[in-house]
Length: 160
Image (tube, rainbow, N blue to C red; front, side, top):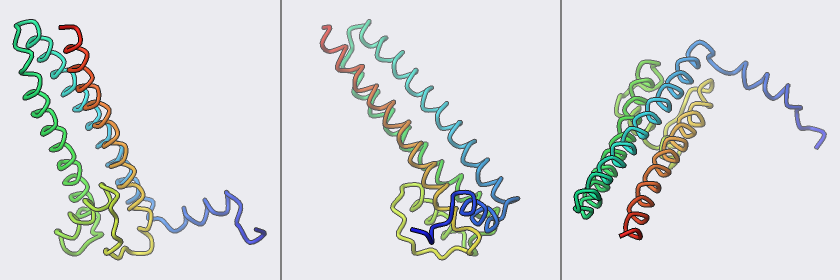
């Protein structure tokens, strides 16, 4: 236990190994993507709520199921867009020589599959952590909204 560095020493070593100017681009990409994802998912949830309220009011509550399936598809597509955004960020930073590798890396890390088949330069070892955290948070937001949508269907069904 005596060989373990204290937190400040560890933090300093990690910070010294990172390309700080480019790392700002990575963190800004993550933050911007999560904000945009959250706002879009909220919009999808609100539109869904309005649609099923309308369907319930007009006596066509059965439409809530196709509306839900469309919402699931839209949410799925937001995650594909997030992976594409990460791909372009990685290409812009010249981390990968081949564009398709940037796409596969972004997809693996975003979904947290992370096979580790893409060797990264030593100073980019933090990149998988940032991409994975963005994917985890985006998936959590999406899951929460989709869960709420199912709850709206169940609650409406109980009232009728």
